[in-house]
Each structure stands twice: as structure tokens, then as C-alpha cells.
Amino acid sequence: MVWIGGGEFSMGGPGVAATVALRSGLGAGEPMCTGLRDGFTDSDPIHRVFVDGFWMDETEVTNDQFARFVAATGYRTVAEYAPKAEDFPGADPALLVPGAAVFVRPEGPVTLEDPLQWWRYVPGAQWRHPEGPGSDIDGKGNRPVVHVAYADAEAYARWAGKRLPTEAEWEIAARGDLDAKTYAWGDERLDTAGRWRCNAFQGRFPDADAALDGFRGIAPVRQYAPNGLGLYDVAGNVWEWCSDWYRPDTYRLRAANGGVVRNPRGPSDSLDPDEPGVPKRVHRGGSFLCSDQYCARFLIGTRGKGAVDTGSSHLGFRCVREGPGPVAGGL
Image (cartoon, rainbow, N blue to C red; front, side, top):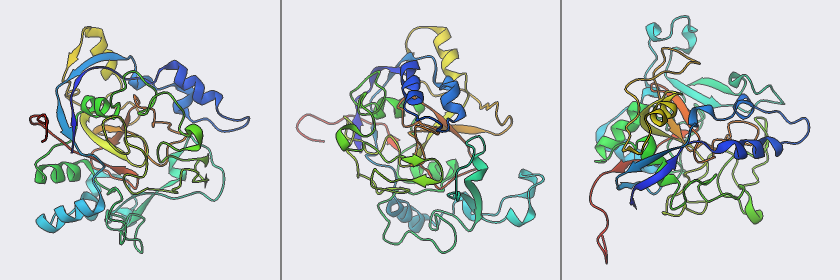
């Protein structure tokens, strides 16, 4: 784990300039998703936050690490149980079987307004079989584990003597020693001087991934330079669960109170106007599916969200724990 010294920082929005830069980077006729048209409104306004020091996993939890947890406890993930009909009224009975949401590349260009054109519920998909039956994680132990619902991530964290980070802890750690920057590495673009900074999507989203960063899909951990505090993959690769409930107005309500917010734990409940009644927690960091055309949440201040009972093929996590920092001259 890496010691995160804490302190005060500017939390939230990538700012108007970053959003405009993304828009202007699109070529003539290239599609633009709703998020880029409307801006990242749920990460506004930027506000000052103080966070105490803590330890954070250097990387996202890997398949090998999660396998050790399962071997020690016999744990079964949410994706390994059949969904209950009462929880999904009107659902196709054929889909009420164990499985998970998997990214499936369309055969050609599609509208970016309907994610169901590239997401499928795949029976049999789970952390051991990320793409569904016939896929496996053999030889992929150093890739981030995926298809973990919130309860799965919490269970692993408890077993490891850790917990999931708050959204504020995640952001101060991901920013490293850089405050008020666009990306985890500063203000330079993803491909500075021909060197890609994170695992994201290049090409026409979602059907033509050029894989200019070296990977089409998930990358093993530690493939890109760490941030200023030694954390890997805080942008791209897979989304990461945070412990905060998701609400789009969280930052606005905080800022209205004024002053510096100390160790925020998030709101007491969840509200997503797009899906009222579906409890959601915050996701951070973006994934290999983020691009300038869609999502773009490799920008360090942006936020994601996800139903607590749902994992997917681009969602993982990392853990934190409290405790004293390193002693001078050694741990």
C-alpha cells in the first residue's frame, strides 16, 4: 500500500476549459456524447476539502488477489447468483440466471445515446469468466478483477482488514501531489510526446478501438507510469468503487455551506434522476472504454455511478486502511 498524507485540496470538476478542449478535439462529423455536450455537471462546483492521511492499495485489486480471498472464504459474488424476479419486474425470464453486463463491440457505427447497443447481459459472466462462458482468467492474474458488485468489494475489503475509499480520499490520492489539474499527471493530454498515460479508448467509439495505448480492453496493472504518490491506473483501465452514495447535487450542497469540508463521507442516501429508486454508489477513474467521444472520465475530477447490486466487465476497486503513516527511515 502507499501512504497518502492527506491535507487540503480542490475537489471536483475538470472545468469549462477541459470540456471545451475535449469538444474541440473532435474531428468534423465525429459523434459527441451527452456528457460532453452538457459538461460534467455533477462534479461542479469545485470546493475545498481536507482529508486525513491513510494508506491506499498501489493498484486495483487483481484476479490473483481476489482468488486468494475466494479460496480462503468460499465467497460467491453477486454475479454468481440468479437475479430475483421480484427485483426485476418485467425482465425476460431467460435472463434471470447468473451473469453480468459485458461490453460487446458493435459491428459498425452506432448512436452514442443508447449504451444498450454495446452492453449485453451475458449469462455465465462473472469474475472468473469476464466475457462469459468460454472465457477465463488463466494467465491473467495481474489484471484487475471485474464483475464485482459493491457488496463483493466490501467483502474483500473486510477480509483484507481494509475498507473502500471515500470519494474524497480517492480523489486526493489520485491527484497525487498535483492540485487543481486536469489529469492525474498534470495538464498534458493522454498521449504526451507519443507516450500514452493511461488505458483508454482510441479510435471510433464503441466499434473501432485502435489500441494505440497498447491494449484493447483491460490492461494488467502497472503498465503505465504511476502518479506522483506511486499509485497506478487511477485513470482508465477499470472504474473503481467508492463508499459514497451517489447524488448529482452533492458538491453543490457542500459548496453552499462554505468553508473547508473535513473528511466528507458522502450523502446519507442515493438519488440518480436518470433512474429514481435505484440505489447507486460513486465510481471513480474511468475505464478502458473512456474516450474523447464518450464518457471522458479519465479527467481526474469527474464522477461515475453504479447500482450497488451490479458489476460489469469494466468495473473493479482498490482499498484503503487507516493507521499511522510511515516512520522516518522506514515503515
